Figure 1 (cartoon, rainbow, N blue to C red):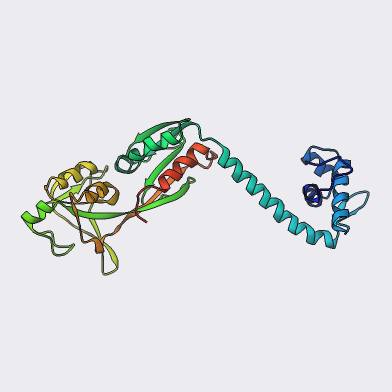
Figure 2: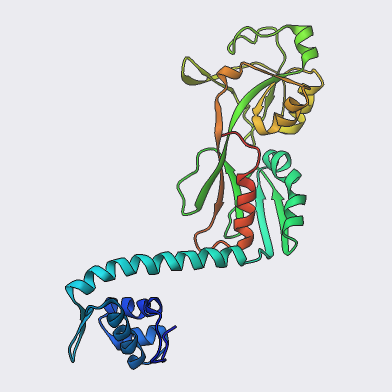
Length: 304
């Protein structure tokens, strides 16, 4: 705010009029941007020059230019103004209460295992947000389906979506203790002879091969399925019950592992199941609700 008070003695408030005048080379242009009169801007610059004891602007009838001393001073002042603006923006963001509708699309397994258990606490912390969650393993069209933010796992296809990595998952090979007592513990990640392998069926109908990291190299192992199904959580339930050995992303098995209902086999050879991303469209500026939700996901219990 430019003051018209002749007795004004705060030189810092006169820095912004000086910076804008120097950048536009015009008192009138600076006045238009600040919403004051050109004479008020001129007086602000004059006060600043008096305060620092040096002429900062060379004035002519046609143009206003910085003096050599003014050029040096301008560089420092621009940094100060930018820092102050960032501070104000951050403060405003902190004070903005997340609210409004939030439409989210989540992969079925990740959503049920990681996000839904945390959703009640999120809604309690942000009572003004109305959350709608869609659980699906297909890639939704965020624009056409009016989705604010989606979670994708694995390598992202080239697109215009803005992405933030919130974690990383890995494949875990799991079995129940009673299964291992009955069938024995497999010797290597490549030897599944005589074992009951439970395999996950992908949306395209194919079976997901088992992935390991052997001798520092990622590889897939061809496994003969004892049983296959297209629901990851149900597959983990069968492993819990001792039906066989499973190979799933870690977020699906985290509860069973924590409860010691299953044990992990060949942990040292586990392979990456892909990065976990939050994506949104660039056409939409992220609302406070979107930022709050993404921040919540970034602190969720996913491998790093």
